[in-house]
Length: 219
Length: 74
Image: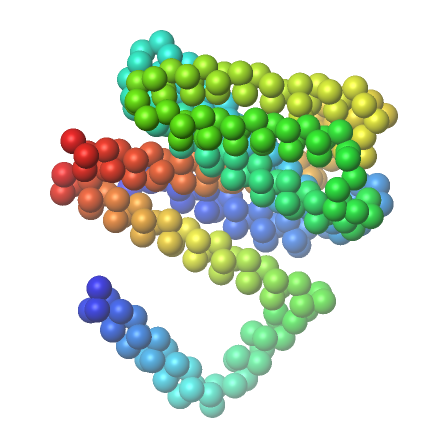
C-alpha cells in the first residue's frame, strides 16, 4: 500500500477537480461564461504534457550518459503518455474554440505551435520504430528527444507569446497569464494539474513494465 | 476467468433482484433523486463523470495487479 499512495492521491485530486470544478461559483473570464471551467480540464492536459515530456527528457539525458536500457524505455513511455495528453489537449481545445472563437481551427499561434510540437514528438516514435538495434535506437532517439524538448518551448510558448493570439499569454496580453489566474480558479486548477499528471505517470509506468516483461520473454 | 465472470453475473443479478425487491422503499429513492435534480440537474453530470473516473481507475488498478503477478512469476 505504501507504494500506491500516489495513485489514490491522483484519484482523490481528480474527484475533487470534477466535483469542485462543476459546483464552485467561479469568476468567468472574458466572454467564456461557464466554459471558463474548461480551465480545469483542457489546460491541465498541456501542463501534464510538459511535465511528462520533461521527465522523458531527463530519462533521455540519463540514458545518454549512463547507457542503461532502462532509462531509454522510461523516456519512451513518458514521451508516449505526454503525446496522449497533448492530443487530448488539442482536441478539447478545438471543441472549445468552435464555441468561443467560431471555428475548430483558427490558426491561432498557440494552436499551430502545439500541433507542430506534437508532430515533432510523433517523429520521435517513428524514429524509434525504424531502428532495430536497441543500443543505436536508444542513442539516436535520446539525442532526438533532447532536440524535440527544446523545440517545444519556442513552439508553444515563446513564438506564440510574440504574436497576437486569442489564447492568454499572446503579445496582446500580459505575459505569464497563468500566474495571475484568479485565486478561486487556481485552487482547483493546480490540484487538477497534479491529479492528471500523476495519472499520466501511472500509465507510463504500466507501459514501461509491459515493455520490460516483453523483453524478458525474448531473453 | 469463467469463475470470475460467473461471479460477476451472479452479483449483478443479486443487485438487480434486491433493487426490485426494495421498490416499496420508494420514498428514500425519490428523495435521493430530488437531490440529484437540483441546480439544473448538474449533479447527474457530476455523478456520471465520477463513475467514469472510478471505472477508469479500477481498470488501471486491475492492469497494475495483473502486471505485478506476471512480474512475480518471472
